Length: 455
Image 1 (cartoon, helix red, strand yellow):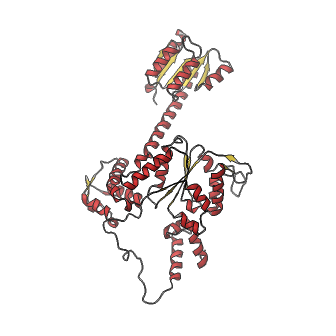
Image 2: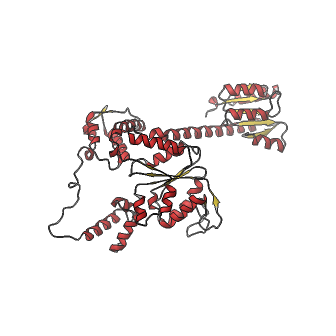
Image 3: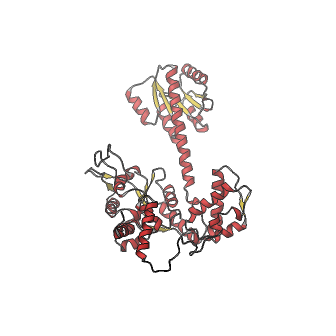
């Protein structure tokens, strides 16, 4: 904030001091409003946008302490500087407890007050920026941004709005790209924890040996490389929400620890014996069938029921094709704003191609397709020629095969072994990425690797 834009309210019953300080602040480039008592200052404060309030501590009609309280009730984001000749420790403590930004005793020099005002304005600007960012976050992740008018989506909206008002544990199920994290953020930012952290962790993206430390934190020296103590995601999300994405990929041993956290609402850092109480809402998500994994002994049944207090199942895009026009309109506006261009109008043939496509990547794939079309289009409208080739001409299942079957008999296990070997090579040995690519669980992949002797 420039000095010419900053507006300062000065309240002091000492006429000479008020005039001198007003002159010094104006000379420094600030706009200054003055009041000769606390009541007058409060009236000005309530009717003006004030960037910094400077008030005497002892004034007639309304003291500095009362003004501090009343102004704070109007807005807590305007920094208040208290000046007084009675600069004892008790008064300073009372002022700071009342919400004062700083405390200066008389007599003070010009440089001291100007430096304090500059710091106060920077602090106020930071608060304003945080407020703006919070507002943007709430706008980005409000429930209205989970787009859809189909019957299935209306049912989802109704359920999400109800659970957002509670702290109940939620399990969001759906294919990749259906918007599970967006729904989780919508629940968080529509509930009472909206001003607290939303912390997301992808259970499949972190190696088994590190995920426990990531979640629970650790003490210095707890393991090789633990050079200093560290908080985990549970503590980072204190008071807010912890989103556990791809919960199906969490190792069984860690599932046991998570179950205890849900039951006891406390954690223990690695290397420590003391427990720490936590206040965290858990929202989990999965793109796999957990009941099937339970039968395969790859997921704990008791943990499932703890997580799925309220299950939310997101439909695939192909199951709600009637939402495609609304989604396209939404992504057109979003992408056009992102790239600072006027949103083009799609022609009817574009929607025909979209309706005929399977959308295995769901809403995420549709958004990427729309953005690509906007960036590459050179007209005011989108036509069939702008639609990506794979969407215009989806291949049949037989055309999608990258190999042809030989005339002589083959061993299915040998083919499976080679496919797994090549997939592991493609992803540098990363088991989680390989399992997702092959459409199987990580545990199933490890079983097959052991079966075929693959390292």
